[in-house]
Image (cartoon, rainbow, N blue to C red; front, side):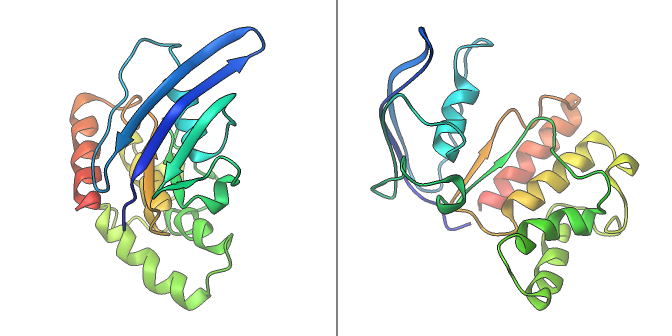
Length: 183
């Protein structure tokens, strides 16, 4: 991943009369890990969805490399998200789940066949290419989700509680994997 700088300026989000986020500002430097901590319901996921473009802020701006991307749809932001629930397609194999991210943007079959095995190796799933999600452990499913998120080399990778469904050992493995991908 190339990385990107992220700057949030006075981000606010309301749902009706309920203010979820009010005037949040911060910077994330290129290559940096950044964590949002807080109690359930405080707006962490909403803020991540705003950065990714899945939610529009009520106010404020999101800058990626100095450009306000609030007007841009998610697919124009070079941001990918790893969700807590994996969001894998149960009818697709490991290879097909990862390749899907490349197919939807029109990448060639040659590029897919060359790139997907490298990403499968990177996330430690070599030999599991033909397995379906229900044949994998939770940690392996999360590795597939991470592979699908990084295969197109996004500038920003958002991980929304990527270890929330995992035991402590697998949680630590996923954290180390994300660190390795960042390097």
